[in-house]
Image (cartoon, rainbow, N blue to C red):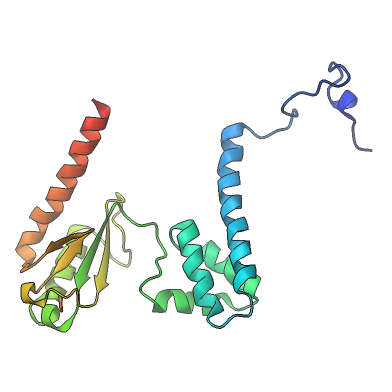
Length: 199
Ligand code: FES
């Protein structure tokens, strides 16, 4: 038999109920769970909205990425389950389109142009050097969460090839030797901001 309020809280007077039941989760923990649940509830609405439409999976994934910030395996599995399709199908779409990301993005996004003009002027070497500097293998984001590295198509600045952008800033006529210095600018900028916040 379910306990009544009087049985659970024998000292409470009639009409006065404690704000939290004895077994209630601590508020901080509840908030964390709620945030995640809230995101899944939002995703459920998106799934309902696009159900049966043409290009449903891409639309759903696009919205899911907006909600979660990226598409980790558990979100991909949830979409597959709800759409009643194999996870491999969802994963195939996620890995095919460069607009989808499977890891949280770093504070700065570096996009290296792999268009023809940049490629022939050494974009591959630029990319390899950045991977080396940031210690990235299969990952896109550095372990300190500072940089996400991606390749991109022509940025429309072929005269400055090879080109990369860091967030909104364009860096052109690059050679592998420039890159340590460029990364340092952002690292020092961030360190300065942190120092200002502390003092
Ligand atoms: S090919 Fe790189 S900017 Fe055009």
